[in-house]
Image 1: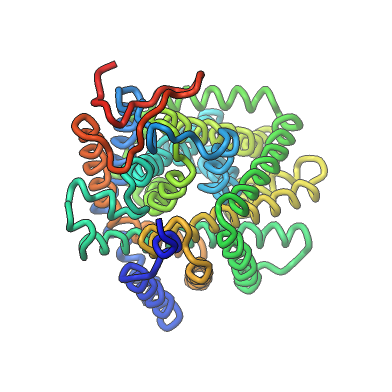
Image 2: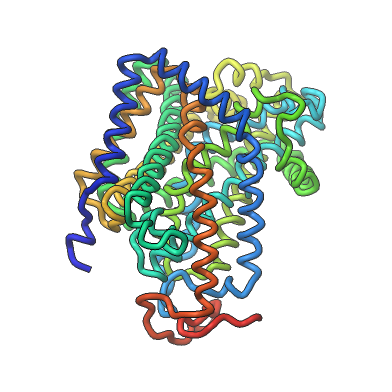
Length: 528
């Protein structure tokens, strides 16, 4: 691979994506009220007409991935038969956990369960009761567990297979070659890549805005700094500079080390609350909520607004699923980049299983502690959360020992999660707009970092959390169609394993002892 290809050159996708993003910024500056009303109208139309798709698609993807992992295709290696994992398993898992949805754990780890506890989803329980406590965790598991990771995993798996085994560029349009042929490299393919950039950019912008709100609240409690839009803008500017520089340093340095530090700080906080809180209650609540999550899995996955609740769904389920859809390509490209050498079975089991279990435990310990405090100890964390969603974490930690220390840790964690997620996203935007280059040039990375920060500031001025939620749902809608195309193309690719050797695959060699045997690229697949 020559340097030009490896370092990447800009083209139509870069300029089209940059122009659309810049126009959105100009629109927000010139006519913020018009932008807000337009996005609100689009949100209502999308959720009323296509809300069912946000419920059905993740469930179908989950079924497909499970089937692939259990089938003979599960032994196919994401790369040539000689490839072995680039990162140690613990580092790989840390990067998956911290880079993908880290800031959400701080923003929603307590806020979502305590909100559902006082306003049970779909009126399925009486507010403030033990039944509401179990339901609150159950729906938090739904929003942050298997359904979310099914969206990420299908993109990651398809892209890893395309990039590492088929030797294609790291572009979503390249996934469509089995379906569209040469048209995947033409104007239609370019349009797919532009949609990908747009959805990815707004998905990250949402996280950036949430992170700014969270850090703003934490600094106010810790240092007494004033809260409000001015502080939030300063936070966005500072963190944008940090994650842009981190992205420019590459995956093996900035992104990798920040992810490992994140995991360590998060583990300290988790154990602190688990051991000093109502440990037995938290474990029991986790088990009961997990049992009800499994028992109601299908019904919960498909419960829509047939009898109302559209507003609740827009604020929670639709927003969450749209957020994950908008992050699909970003997370998929990042997962593909760090998963070379894994088999399909390993990839699916770890990407679906490990983050889901970690998030279930996190929500149970932190959200369960807040629920216990309100239900049994007379606190009003739910009231504080209703007034300001970003205060939930800090209001809970205030009831534990050394609140100043734990608050400082949460602020540090929010900043690190903020940086690790956003710098990975900036790296991916650089890849998407430089013909799939695995080493985008530093000016490109810095430019996308600045654009992400500018969009976050515009949306914070436009209406804070509500504007962020509206925009991510609207921006993700066209991407639902792209996901379906990715699935069809990927299935065609896998079926071709039975007929031909993948392009560029070297001669296979035996797997080391203890490693899962991969399907040889030069042999047809046979039933196990």
